[in-house]
Amino acid sequence: MNCVLTYYQLIYVQNVFTIISLISHAAKQNPPQVNKAVTYRLVVILMRVFYILFFLIITALISNNTLAQQKPIPLKKIYTDSVSGKKKDTTDVIVNGKEQKDIYNLISDLLNKKEAPVKDSITSVPVVSIAPAVGYTLVSRLAIVLSGNIEFRTDPSARVSTIIASADYTQNKQFTLPVQTSIWTKNNKYNFVGDYRYFKYPQSTYGLGSNSDISHEDPMDYSYFRFYETALRRITGDFYAGAGYIIDRHWDIEYLGNEFTRPAFEIFGRPRSSTASGFTLNALFNSRDNDINASKGIYANVIFRTSIKDLGSTSEWQSLIVDVRKYFKFPAGSDNVIALWSYDWLILDGHPSYLDLPSTSWDANSATGRGYIQGRFRGAQMVYFEAEYRYKITANGLLGGAIFANAESFSAQQGTKLQSIQPAFGPGLRIKLNKLSKTNIAVDYGFGNQGSRGLFIDIGEAF
Image (cartoon, rainbow, N blue to C red):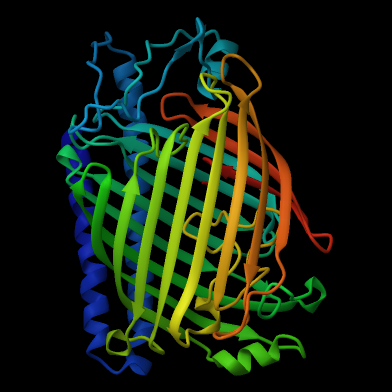
């Protein structure tokens, strides 16, 4: 089994390097003639990467089932921070004398199935969480979703590596295929972060700035491909720095334009396709005790991005993202958590294409602005803040709840001031999908201004 996993992991890496090679080749050609063919090949390779990840998920499930039928072998506790020895990415499976439960335990109880003992640390054996679901959001309406994540360690001294993937098809005829990876090496020396997506995505826009009215809706349709790859090196403690290559590619863009959105299109152009290709400089501080569902610690990520014409970009521009999160238990000593999030996304110089501008719910986790439809607000500058209180409902951890509130403000084009602050709030339900990784099924209902409201279902916390 390990040989099979290693083989497909090598194939996965080979495909990633093939993507980078194609992008480099395209930059040396005439973009109008080559971009479409290259984009098609990139999408095909991205699909291949997804199928390999799906195979790894299934293989991991088979591997876990096989191990569960064997005599359990005691595993020593693994500490992820090899420098300070602090315990991270471990889970208490018994809290205040109460054994913690998840959906898999519930199913086993209903089937009267005896379970193998569960350890409180993730090892090199992948821990898999998969959840098929029927969901509903403002941007998609009814959606059929298959999503999940894999957690594992590349070395006993490394933090937990994650692969998160999903496939959605919606009532609005949208198809999305996002894959996100975070791979930690021995002694946490390097962290390789990837974000790969293919979207066939009818989605409305409402003009520039946070003063835009929901009645100004302008339907759009386009296809979208993303390839982000970043390498971070440990500098000291929980601080990392590095660089990356990223590309956003939109094509077959269709929009009518009305009296409210047409001025925005005139400012940023009305191309049938656009490409933003360039490099990033990254700085990261991450002291969270769990990357999927933190209960304490700080996460701070700063990303400076360039879009370079010589690499195939439609236009040259630079942007800055400052993503800061803080987690602490409240009351102290309880399992309840207050989570705070600040997310600022700023265009520093140049003129990005309309679809590359900062926008609601277009952060890496598509999580900003619960209470509003994705793409509801868009502009050259985005300032965002959110607070969430997460609490237990049942002592065994199977059910939990959340209350959240957020606020966002956008400018229109560069050089203009931030406009109205748009608030949103709502309650949420948490269902423990995997108690070892602390992965929840999150069901939230958000309320925003101008009658905006909707149901949001996801695997894992918003931030």
